[in-house]
Length: 515
Image (tube, rainbow, N blue to C red; front, side, top):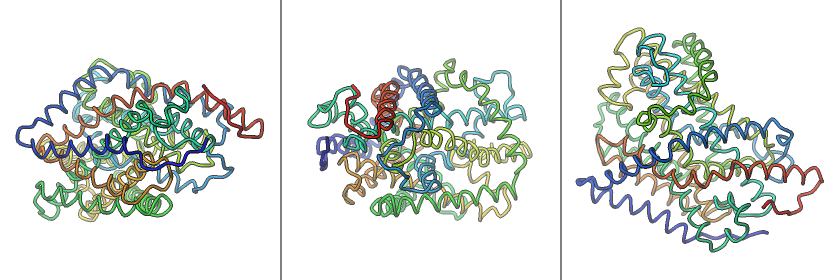
């Protein structure tokens, strides 16, 4: 069936209205901290009751995706065209930039260094701050941003969405993920369909608000450190305003212009930075420890993925990150579906669940590994700023130890801004697609979502010293309903792949039910 979609007002009112209400209440109650208290309490509930479920869901998604990719079903071509629309380099560049924003510089600098200073509980008996602590620190960072983290974003859910939209004419909306269960009744005026779309939009908005907030903190710290610009809320607002402007312009121009151009040049600039650090920085240390730590990560993959002995610690690290990625999943799947027409199932899984995490982990080793190297050479040179200035201080501390520190610091700030702008423009575009079910939503709708996400980030930064905690907690809370929506993909994606393989073997795409 083919549907002509317009703006879904119930979804728009619920998702946009709740976020707008959150922004207003945050500013009104900035002194009483009522919003902050609600977010913290909801976070504690989410981590306690859903943390273990999320860890199993993530691992199961990765395993099933890999099995599908390397089975005969891996040859299934998705998108109802014979050749890809976008070149492989540009395709992977867009995928990388869209999610890597949050970890691109902020967490890539801070997380490995933090785990080096305080060894994760999964590795008892290893003294923090020593050479023996390097592999555990990097391996834990690899887990948090590794195979399972990426697999949830664009593998099983992408298979279902691409089949439904391109092969069956269903709308490109999160509710299409559940079409195999509910049938056509979920597509029209359906309470379940409306809630699925609204929860998915709120979750990805929260996930995008996070990087915007982290950028405000990190860029403001960098500007104060380098140029004595006051690190105050006004500076945060100006930085976010510039970011929202860039993202809005890019989102309005669409995938084949602004989003693709921004992603491509950001990847090129990042590759140049990686090359410079390897050449003029601790290149041998980075390569040796990436290989060695990856062996530790792969060897302990199952035990690290399902570790439950320190739930409070997990809530700050692994469960937080994985809740973040779960919240992104439906919208990221729409985005990957939109840019992956003509790709095989195997290509999509390999790009999203294998190539992207390996590149991400290497980037973490380049940035965070450099920090560990400098800390080993001169105790306190990185850990001191981290303890005094918090997580946003880590990047500046690392770049100051490299040759040409001012140039490297400015370059990293630029990369950070463009990374986050790429995610913001991509998600503004994708949310608008989800609200209309069409690939070319109105420009005003795209700009609205860029502005509302920037405003929500500013509201969280208004909380002051607890900003990072508030941002993390807000992200995790919104992932709870989305994780329930994603659970059926574990068995629906294999069904869809088998159905599509049968259709392509028969030489046609006749519409048949997969219920």
